[in-house]
Length: 496
Image 1: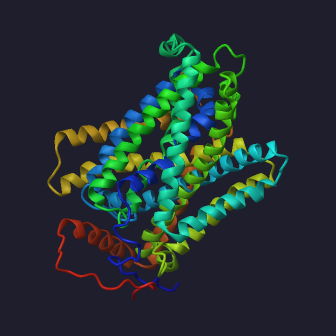
Image 2: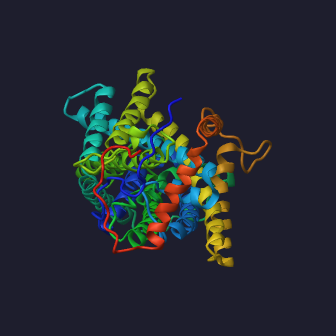
Image 3: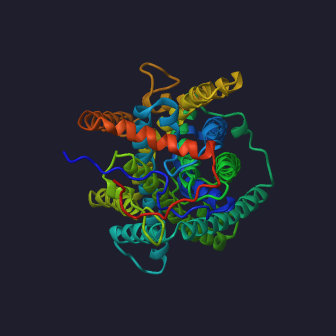
């Protein structure tokens, strides 16, 4: 086996210091895609959690705030395109870092696949109104292709597009939410507040998809080289996106469940609940506007998922874990163009293949979204464990940091138990097929990828040293900045 070329770690060729806080926040909000939950996916969670859906979101928000505190122990001290892969490798060592890296790329790519299906589903419905009926694969190809171009061309173009698409969608949905609640007389829904008919197992199982709803809130960490003032803007984006999205999810869940009460329709079976509710309040035109804005939000999430996935590939390639071509940056665009192209292709091929087997797009969204959740859960648990270990190494550990770590792991353990189930338990029953198989497929994925890493270490023992050196250089750059050092010109080729 030919030994991979090692790439210079400090001059990676990405566009430096170009994104202000608003665009950094837009990256996290785009992958998180708060529009998609109330506009499309809420029914999947209501089917599991019922009147306790708002509680599933509240628990998810609280848990992810604790996770964000653990993430920010690293993000406030260093930044890199490697996102949580670099952090976990720093805290727990190379093997844990590789588990995180593989989990992240699966999580981001499957998020992109899931929302690309949502994009195709909404596009098909909207185009059908005007008598246009393109094939599913055509719509999938258009969505993935345009996202590829934006990500390939310029990170600032990507960030601005995501910022405006999400902002417009959120304003429209919030407006409709107020109208729906007003139509109901601003009543207090005691069925929801008293959790009528809700079971702990339902709330826990709903948390699996809730974590998918929040997933990607940490993706701003992948902009470590491109963000302005990254040690401040990235931690604020991570924490802010979790809180803002959580409050939005809880509010819209309450309003939509209330809105469907007494209508004879089932929110759990609705693929476009806001469209239905807009008709109920006599504002169908607003529902149409939201459908169009949701379409753009789905696209923003596809784009937002490709960006961090490519940057994790990019960083791992520069550490010798993937072919060196994935660690190249475009000489003029300053983007990881090879990794972006590969990520975009994967995001397209999987849902396109599923459509060839006549799997409904709405079902594809649920399946792919559930699978990606296991990647995020793995990473969130690992980062919560890594934070106190890292703080202990640098002599900054406080008892409160240990508490945050335990709470982060504990809250993430709830959806893990809900997704796997406990034999004979009424609280955590095993999920129905095919969801019952997904955790084990993900475990097989981890075993396979970790086995590949073991083979890499045996064939090239220097690979661990390359990882450690690259990550140490990242942290040292922020720990001991030297303004007298002038960086050399960036090369677009691997450095020997």
